Image (cartoon, rainbow, N blue to C red):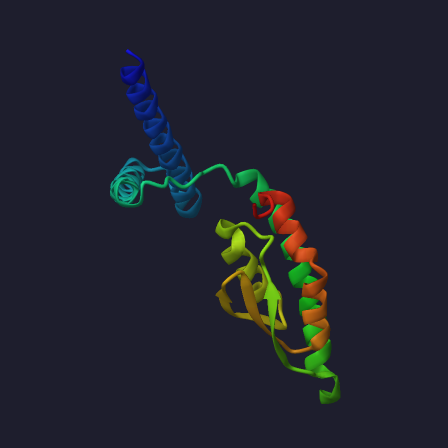
Length: 173
């Protein structure tokens, strides 16, 4: 009896997982297309079904379902990232228009050990999105970063961006 309950519970969780993805994908498709005509809605539904089929196949291979519940963290993170991008853009513009003596290109490794494994790519991409810095490599809990100015590396080493990500998605265990 307990075994049957466990199988049904696992099956129910799987269907909930697939329904969450179906909803997220369809809403995303609807936001991108913006059309509410029956033919286009059916194309969206077919697209979602195809993606769900691929997702099911991937779940069978890796047996590690990805969570869909990162929306609130992303809503809190994106405005902060946007402000950082604007501030860095102004700084880079001043660097480009100013004297070349202010440029001090540097390539250094920044620790990402505290950032959860599944958020490290987000961390590296956030560094790249910030003008004046470029993530070159992400390996063994370190991000290799190229910056136009040593001050940008120093700012990353202070950990504001890392703290923002770990504050929203948790620290590495």
